[in-house]
Image (cartoon, rainbow, N blue to C red):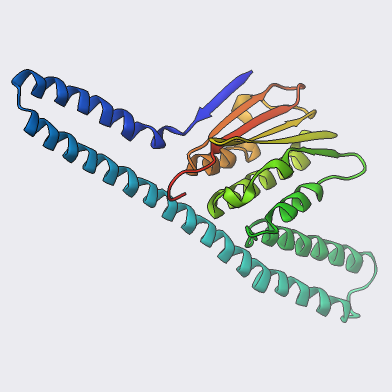
Length: 262
C-alpha cells in the first residue's frame, strides 16, 4: 500500500499564479495595443507576487522557530524541575528506613523509571547543536537506538554537505529521525533499519526502511508518524509512506536543499 503526502506547493503556487496572471494581462493589452500599460501592469503584479511569496516564507520560518523554542523551553522545565523533584524524592526514600522490603524496592524501581523517562523526554526536546559537530551528534543519536537485536545501517550521511543546510532544516531532520527511531523501538519490532541520505543540488532525500511489522494507513497518526508529516511540511517537503502489515515500513522524506528564509 502506498500513500503520499505532498506539501511543497507553498514554494511553487505563487509562481504558477504569477504566470497565469501575466499571460492573461499580456493577451488583453496585446489586443488593445497598449504596451506601456502592459509593462507597468506586469511589473506591479511581479512586485505584489514576490512580496506575498517572501512574506509567506518569513511567516512559516517564524512559526517553525517558535515551535522549536517552545520545545526547548519544555525540555528545560522537565530537566530543571520535574526530573530534579523525582531525584529528590528518590534520595529521600533511600534515607527513610520506615519503608522496607519489597514495597520499598518496588517504589524505588518505579521512581527510577519515571526519572529516566523524564530525562529521555528532556533530551528529545532539548537544544540541538547544528554547527560543525551536527553530523556527529545526528549519527550518535541514531546509533543509540541500536542494540544486540537491532542493527542500524546508515548510508550516505557523510556525503551530505551539511554546511549548506539551514539551521531549521537540520533541527527538523534530527527531530524527524528521532521520532522515527522512537516509533521503531516502541511499535515495529524491527531488527534491521536502513537509513539512506541522498543530497542533490535541489533536494535532500532521506529513505527509512525497516523489516518490522509494518502499518496500515489508518494507524499512522496513532503511531506518532503524523508529527513527522507536520515537521517535513513546515520546511516545504514531501513525505511518502509505503507500508502494509507484515511487510515492514518505508518512509521517503525529501525537502528543498535550499529555500529562502527556511
